[in-house]
Image 1 (cartoon, one colour):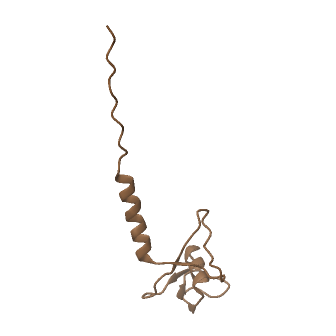
Image 2: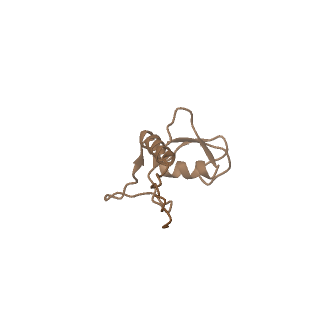
Length: 96
């Protein structure tokens, strides 16, 4: 991924343009040392519940498609909209 350094970093000075591995580039972007170049798509990775990235059987990070993210958000919103139905209660008449 092509990045442009914004702050001074060990690998570059402000204004430098460099090619970095995707994971390293994402870390530099999150730490605000760099910004992605125009036209570059940022790669999102699938995360576990504790926030760590998911690794497959071969040691590679699992990429998350934008389509999957949108469908999951839509599914969560539709599930939250459904209200549980309360069972009807019968009234008990008093004995005379």
